[in-house]
Length: 100
Image (cartoon, rainbow, N blue to C red; front, side):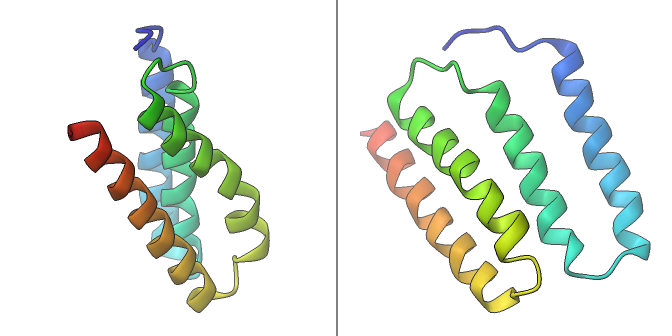
């Protein structure tokens, strides 16, 4: 893997997580999964230049799903749950292949 992740990149993700933690207290419950997903997306952006093909598949899938999840599934909890379940299966499958 290309080790080009800088401290400032990680600090930005930490800031996002902390501010999201605070904001979730006062926001509608639908915002919580979106904030967590956006944190995952930010981390994926840091891994875009990976040499590992399995990691690249996972990263690309999350980035590809971002507009769908944040725009189309925002107020559709059942559909969002199914999408995230499918994503979890996809990630698990690719991680298993990585371990083999």
